[in-house]
Length: 347
Figure 1: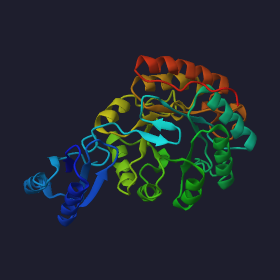
Figure 2: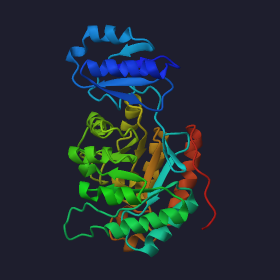
Figure 3: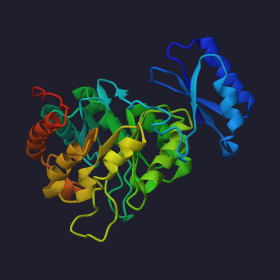
Figure 4: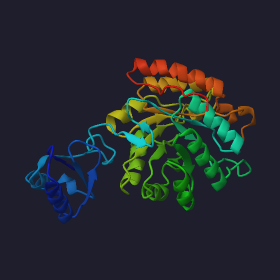
């Protein structure tokens, strides 16, 4: 159930509604960033009792009370009719300009991350990615540089002016990650690590939540609820491929999911063509398809020398190929009413 306030409702009227919601035994959640304040009722509503609808509808300043049948409440477009836009420093995710998140899978050295950061900035990317803690199938594979990797990523971000993105694997690392980066990423393997989602929601940093390859759209939206329930509305959903019978690529990017999610939810949606393909030869085509399908941005792995990468080299683009992708993406973006940032001068 959500209570939609009238445009220009007084603070005192909003406070009266919040008090009434709490008195009825529910937790009120005031949705930020909308013209009309929307107050969601969190907690079990017994069959959305009609008397509750009548009670809240009669309060001063209330325009209407809407019942929400979906199990996800805060991520629902019924709660937040307008599409959310998340500001991260100079970058925006969910607006007209596409969010282009690019950089290496892993931070390997100062020279490597600095070269990658300069290359993606010059090509027009507006956010820098780099892993410091890496989830690997084999315990013998490179696991990331840890805190020193975070420090190098933060330094590269300051050098280029790009907000930074990195993945968290364990709540114990959250404090260090939040200190050094601008956006916290929840990887596909941890999409339903509910304790981690709750901890991340309390940090107060924007979050990119990746879809698990074996989970449905509704499960992704339910996972986002765990973060938002902790008071963090700045959640970006990421489609990065699902498991199917096809084995020509690592996963199958679910292009259907992009317009479906945007119909069901107000949260921004981006795509990760690198992890979906697992092969750099297909990354550009998949990225362009995602933009055409309505994605608010893409996350692409770019490495100065993929042959020497310590993780995910086969799916990483060289800087020259990434620049060509950006040129093509500019044209597709214009065709669908979006835009890509103008490339920067060489740093």
